[in-house]
Amino acid sequence: MSTDQPMSNQSTSSSQPDEEGHTGETEPGHQEGSAKEGRPIYLRPADEKELGRVVAARGGYKSVPHLLREYLHRSLIPRIQEGRCFPGRLLAETTGRASSGASGKSPTGGKSPAGDSAKGQADSQARTKIQLGLESWVAVEAAARALTGALRRLEERRAREGGAGALPFCRCGEAEVVRAAAREIATWSRGGPPELFSQESACRWLGPSREDSAKEGASRREPGREPPHQVLPILPGRERGGKPVQYYITEEAKKRLKSKGAQLGQTGSDLARRATRMLIRRVEEAPAEALRHITEESRLYREPREGETSGFQVYLAVKTKRRVERAVARLNQRPGRGDRLGQLDVLQAAARLAIETPDEKMRPPLPGASG
Image 1 (cartoon, rainbow, N blue to C red):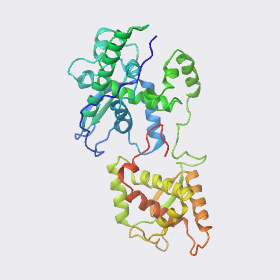
Image 2: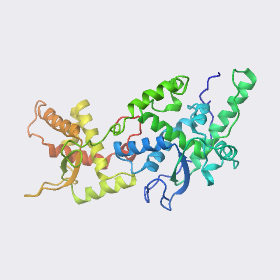
Image 3: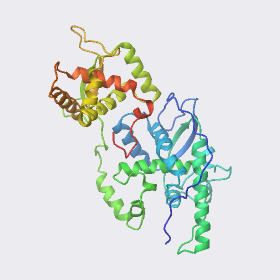
Image 4: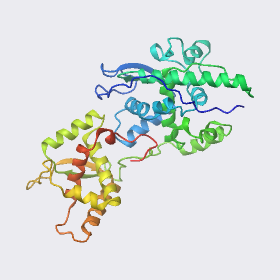
């Protein structure tokens, strides 16, 4: 059997979609805001379920469509355009029942392989429909054209050089690109490799031993298992996860934090949690730099008022709360320290870090990435 090859580097002319404003987000299966062009996409139910687990566990993503949009534009589409995907495997894993409308068409206007197979034969794989809204489908369509071109070149090369197995040519449509993103996220969530269609380990995952891998995966997917990388695990006897902490910042700072979160499809609390972890890492790796940031004065801070019990309240994971306490103790042990720092100083500095850090660095981490 011939081995699939990664795509060759091929420049594709495509204009990137504008930065999206995450408004009108809805749950899968419902029409999203009018600012986005919604298209129905069919996913494997098991994949959609894993995507839901990732949304619930990682924080920063409002819904499955939000997660797919971020993953497509920040991970899969750039790899496709750079020629770092295995087009044959990608298409073999994503063809199936086509949705009606645009997602059943190829970028060139013809029927996609999914659309043809849906008409020509009954689909044995059940699918779940979601409604995916994008401000522009140009980048997805360009990625589909790039995959189609790579498949055509692979077919022509095998015809010239010969091979053990035939490679019937198929076109790739937008639906297959979206399904590929869903498959990569779901495979990682089930314990498989990140960037499935770019990894050498994909040969083992998709190859002859796949049945054994499926059995191993099934043993890891017991009912009621905790989702991976859970942000705020709920402790026994508590109604919600995490420990409440107060970020004493001004009303202006609160508005800026919430507004920035909304622009990135997150909440102000998501940004504050991420910035707190960023600042703790800075204390651990570059304490002098972190100390300068923490001790700088800022008009974004305010002092707690007497008798006040609430500020900008955020729930931190228990592990993160302990790391904050250790970071404070570490900074106070530095030689030459006069005034002692408290947890309040670190939390205020973290809120300021969330506001001042460029938007791109405050986006939620993608599945398979740390942070």
